[in-house]
Amino acid sequence: MTDQLIENIHNHSLQFLLGGGCSGKTYIAIDFASRIRDRNVYVFESKESLSDAALQSLLERGNRLIIADSNTLNIRQIEKLIRSKDDLKKQNNSVLIIENKNNRDLAGLIKLLELNGVIEANSIPQINVSNKFNEQETHELNQRLIITNLGVFSENKTIADNIIECSHNLLQKNRFDRIVPHFSSDRQIACLIALATENKIYSSRAVELDLLPEIYEQERASKPLIEIESTWGFETSPSNNSPIKYVASAEYWLYDQLCKFSKAKGSQDLIIKAYRHIILRLVEIYGKPNLKYGDKYAQYKSYILFDNINQIFRSQGLVLIRGIYENLNDLLSSDPNYMHQRAKCYIRSSRFETDISKKLKFLEKAYRDASVSHSVFEKRYEDTGNEKIQISIAHVKYTKALVLCHQTKLNHYQNVEDNTRAVETLYEVMFSPYNSYDFAKTDIYNYGNVVMSLIKTLILDNSLVDVKARVLLTDLYREETVYIVCPNGTAAECFAAYLQNTLTPISSRNGILILDTTHSYRAKAVKNRYCTQTESDICFVAALLPKSESGQENMVKNQSMFEIMACMR
Image (cartoon, rainbow, N blue to C red; front, side, top):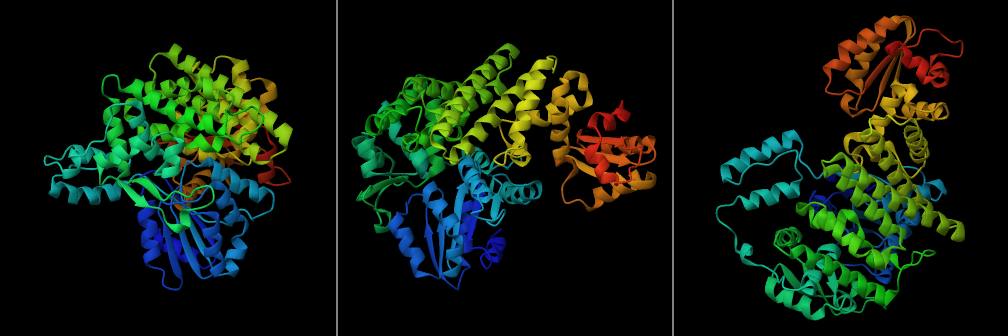
């Protein structure tokens, strides 16, 4: 990946390196920085912030490579860099921004700027880093780990989970295991949550959160894993003139400490109170959120994102996280972002619930919260015309579609009206520029790939969906289908060639439709021969018997999918 970054630097002034926690993004970035010799290199860690003035000063000098780790730049600064990427190139400047792969605000912003013609589509490289080792990497690593008696890694677990598990298996504990922060009060816990969420707490932020004495105590108890550092000049601004900051030097040690504490009796009430303390302080200072404007959201955004809370307290399931959200309802119920995040929490709760009636109850709550969020965002857009709100609208509508897909699957697709509503909602969502099948395939809320499960089930039995939704369903299916049109009864040869030459593994496709222009039985034979030999159940094979004068591709696009699929029955 470093080689790819180096290759891109000559043609692209701006790049993004995306990945989950503990995926190696920072290591790749440091390796990249160490191999650049033709310009001045500046690396900013996640424990640092870059002020607007400092960023502008760096860019004006020219011949610079700026590497900004997560949380170094805010979304407004990132937008400015995207808009000025051509000017960066003129100055021979390059910027690498490291971000979390789940940052949909960033993805939505880039798409919006593409739609508005500010930048060309796909003009900014986005390199994705997996947070898991593949099978070969795991095998090679395990050969070394076995020798050291550290245990072995699993390719099915994240790198972070593997590291934590191996550390727990150590017979001889390291000296840092004896370092334990204070957990006596909700305010002490709030300090640790703030550090785990923001990576660094400036002294002015500690005053805002009313946690200055407590964070000083935590630093004394946890040194060197929590440290005081002087603030760099490039971090200061009129809104942040803090002389010092508190930083967590060992991020996953902090997560592990919070996880261990959350298992203790009575701990969950203290954690819930700690979150409330933080949000209450920010609301008191910056004001309560209102239905019309979202200007207050930025101050507490990172504390209410489900992915952030789940990353810290993932070992405790969702009872704790639901408690956190529900305890904040009186403070944040008018914020559509809060309602959307709580809806995601209910979707995940449904996944891990075993009782069907309780699963459906959680999904009802998720749909209710997502619908409230949707209506507020729609009203904001109507009142302000701010195009960025369209990104939020598209994301919350995607969440609503997911809930409907989960509900119909749990009900075994028995209700035609529910199926139809799910198809109509999904159609609107998937043809939005701010959503995509590629995202849905890896989305943790789309567990069991319920999106494609809905489409496959209903496309194969059109009696399960209302007539008005069948055209939409056909378009949804066609959007994610590989079409192989085979003339003169050569379906087997064409499909074999596809399997040999495709760059996409067969199991990752949502549909493969083989169209044989002469004999339906030949296409069926290909299905029996090839699709049963893969681990995938997503291959569809059909035959297209008549031949049109306008060509086979047009026939594929124009003919009813239900007619095409009829030969499978």
